[in-house]
Length: 399
Image (tube, rainbow, N blue to C red):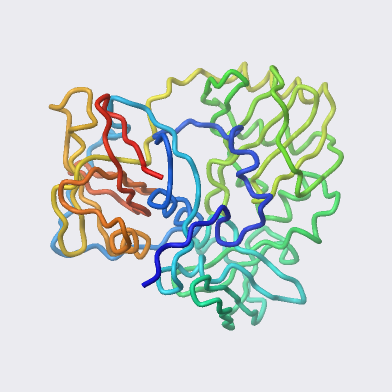
């Protein structure tokens, strides 16, 4: 088997992707590493592949979750994760990683970074047959397959469609030729994001994070103001404007999760919610009003650490699961506990089977999207990273 191929792109997404705006992304859920290399890269590529539902091993019993969340964990350090990617062999890819492009109605649609969805309320009427295509870097081979295309509820099928894959429905967008100078409110409407996009937090220019009381009102305000420009493929985010703020934008069911939506006091808007950089301009008065509203209807939130990651020492690797004890990371060792991570999901299995393979006694980090039950069972894990531990209790990922 060939070794993993590293890449600075995800699922062959255009290089004007979100990484151009990475330093402006809100960091409300942080668990960082000092460096990320091949092992860490599998996490980001898997995140772009979407959610694959897992079959739970019969031998692992799930107890009733605690009423109060056990996350974030009381770790000694708070970390930041650098981002890169691994291109996996074809047989280790999810459907959304395999088939990143769709030809339909004479247009080329590309997979949203959120990958597959299982929410049937998003799926509208059938549109007919389409052609999926994907590329395998290992064999230098292009794969094609016929599939059925469907409307996305509330969206314009000339810009967004759903395609039936084995593991769910892939959401694909056509943006390059359809956007032009489209207004922001028009884009949100045609892409099915109107009424679904949510703002939960914002980060100011000093790096402080604030929880919003009414993010829905801010989304409404932004979509109702007059805007100009509409530039898809903007090369860079805004500068260090002392009065700018960056909202956390979410609509995971349509491929928008923890994205940046920045508003400058001078009236520039920059966002990566469409996977490509997009900018437009509003009046200075509207921008100041939006920023003032956000600051007046929010409360500063202390950074308590990333809540979608656990780490620790591997204590057991069994059939369909791995167990990890996080005691070594905790301020108070008495607060340490053991977590059970199912390993049947292909995104976890490939991390278990490729070098460096985790083994008993290793320090690892596990990334997930689901819930953690009271007995420590981790839901929807999508990656495992081999790591080392510093004397201060900080996890390090070797390059």
